[in-house]
Length: 188
Image (tube, rainbow, N blue to C red; front, side, top):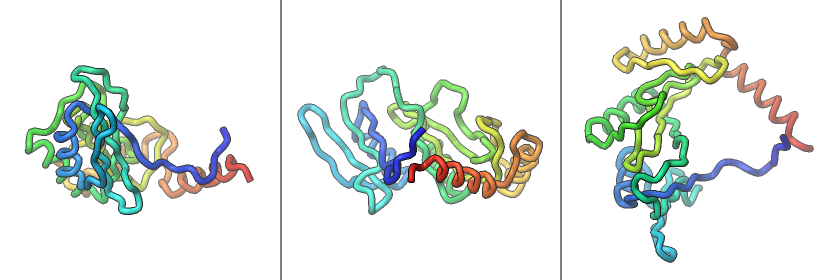
């Protein structure tokens, strides 16, 4: 597959059933701000961002009908640390804004390369909050994550699991290999 220099992920767009509720959810719990809002024809749009260099990282548009199948697999947000992940997840749960989703990856999960919590936004889109770990193992991996453990105990358990899995190595080694593979695949 040819790599294209100068192309990087910018944003995602989602159709929503209740624009105000969705904007409130992402601004209240994940710290986004509305950069623009407006209407084109029958659709209303909200542009939200957490990066001052990006006009929007998510654009929401009205037009999704209640019960309409969701085509988004998930929206994933890296957080600084386990404390922030726990705090944000607890805030959503406490407020009763946690939407229950059907599926195998809901709630707290360890992928070993990352520790995650999954929940639904008001429209039932899967949202992931995650923190990276310093380990790599062959993916996909999905194990329950016990958030009642202290950070030290949780990380020790995840590392012990990781060391018994195929492909275990420090993430830095995996990243260096990926960097070499990407450079080799990039046209001169």
